[in-house]
Length: 78
View 1 (spheres, one colour):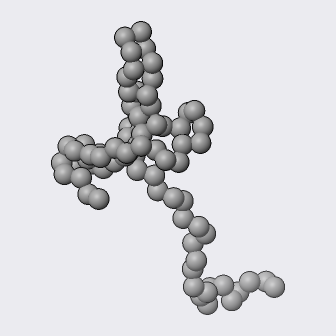
View 2 (view 1 turned 90 degrees about the vertical axis):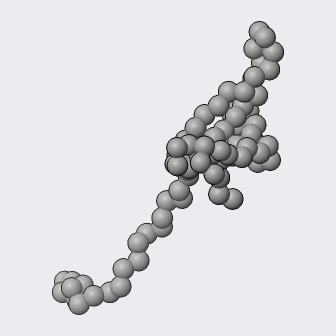
């Protein structure tokens, strides 16, 4: 789902396994840049409120780069 400029969508975190995991999370578009948002429901003196954190979208690390074998590798000493 692509968000329009300065909008977003936040959903209940169905994968929450620990207290430090966010209660809600989603993606937002801030000035044309996609960001991830995490929300925690907290209790304060005046009642419930959301605590928020914004981060760059997660990108999984790539596995080892595969390169084709070249003639340069033929001069190995073994």
